[in-house]
Amino acid sequence: MRTYLDCIPCFFNQALRAGRIATGDENKLKKLLDEIGTMLRDIPLESTPPETGMLIYEKVRKITGKFDPYNELKRESTEKALALYPSLKNKVEKSNDKLLTAIRIAIAGNVIDFGVNRKFDIEEEIDNVLKKDFAIFDYDKFKDYLDKTDEILYIGDNAGESVFDRILIEEMKKPVIYVVREIPVINDVTYEDAIQAGIDKVATILSSGTSAPGTVLETCNAEFKEVYKNSKFVIGKGQGNYEGLSDEKHLIFFLLKAKCWVIANDIGVNEGDIVLKGINV
Amino acid sequence: MRTYLDCIPCFFNQALRAGRIATGDENKLKKLLDEIGTMLRDIPLESTPPETGMLIYEKVRKITGKFDPYNELKRESTEKALALYPSLKNKVEKSNDKLLTAIRIAIAGNVIDFGVNRKFDIEEEIDNVLKKDFAIFDYDKFKDYLDKTDEILYIGDNAGESVFDRILIEEMKKPVIYVVREIPVINDVTYEDAIQAGIDKVATILSSGTSAPGTVLETCNAEFKEVYKNSKFVIGKGQGNYEGLSDEKHLIFFLLKAKCWVIANDIGVNEGDIVLKGINV
Image (tube, rainbow over all chains, first blue to last red; front, side, top):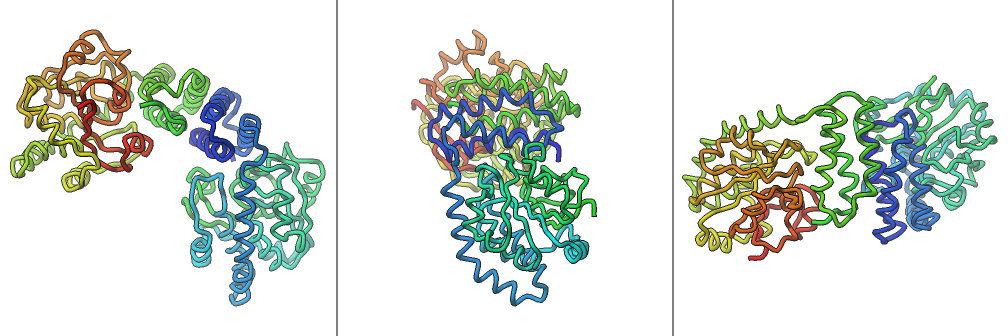
């Protein structure tokens, strides 16, 4: 997805939100916004938002001196999600379509996102997403490709959300490579977070190599790019992966909730909608 | 009022909103945001937001080539407000406290503001503000000073809103100097807009000389500064005038609706509250 003009004020909001988690020093926060301001002219509208996100969070780290401002929030998110795990498994077990319920739960977990300015109630969100109609619902194709594949490349999104991904991974009953970010960026899932979520028990964890809050292929490592190139079944979770990969010529199923109206508009749905969208299928 | 860090993303939103009214050319809009980005480091947090507003709208004019993007919207706002004028006069006539009802109506008119990202329904707003409790209500002091003064300096805010101001002016029954901006900035009231609203029939119109969306004294002309210095009863209407004058050592009554949470917080009220606040009283 390209950068829309409306993404630009949002970049400053995101920087301020992350900066404030890292420091209370107003002078540092002003410097952070000033530097993003200066950088703006070098950000073409043709670039994807996570490319800019990467630069923004580099600046947050550099100026505040905090490598991982969201560390504590991420750990808490994962703990809360783990506490819900047994009841979520139970919901899947009791449902008529276990795979679909697991997909819905994985999407509900996508609400754990500190990059989007929104407070959330995860239990309320689960109830909503379990009942909600999909705005795009490529479920039949998803099942077809799932049947045929012998391996799934599952690109994770946020810490905490990974526990919900785990439920879907368990339900797909195929070998899964679960992709994490190389270093902490917002509350995106890293290797350490995936381990905390128990992903290592159900999948092979692989770092994409990127420090962007989304999959920006040019910044990914050779190993990930090779696996990606050869994969016949890719799941891209959340907005950041959609933003980075939506223009790819590769079969990808995006699972997300459209939490931002700009992304909703790019997908062709309404803000708040849930989406199971396959591209190049 | 100082500039808060949260004002910075809002500056970009405002620029984008104004820019889009002036042009559909995405390259020009990107250039506009880029130039505001570059300018950011020269905007100290000690400056008032309308000082930056002035620079932003200068850039909107320069880059889009449109001197007055809101011209059409302003004319329409005033026409709509004029159509309501007889019924508003009627509300005042029928009320127990005519002055207070006129104050409430003047505040309701403050909802006509294209600088704040909000759609509004003016008739609904009038009904709300006529019933709503004031969060700050220095009405007794307002009446005391009004009784004693022989002239009122009434600093206007937006076009359209001026028709509502006219109702208050008529109810105060004292000579009024009504202050307008020197050139168009957002939908702020200029000389031409005030004439359209019929202000010339009830007050002497005076330009403050500023091109800021608020009263920034350093940018005002000598005549206004002299009148202001000597005035014993100043009314500052709307957020822009509050932002520009809230730290002044001069008796001013601010009449406004807090439409932005940053300003609400600075005043010490909640977003959406209505305020009749005297300073140095």
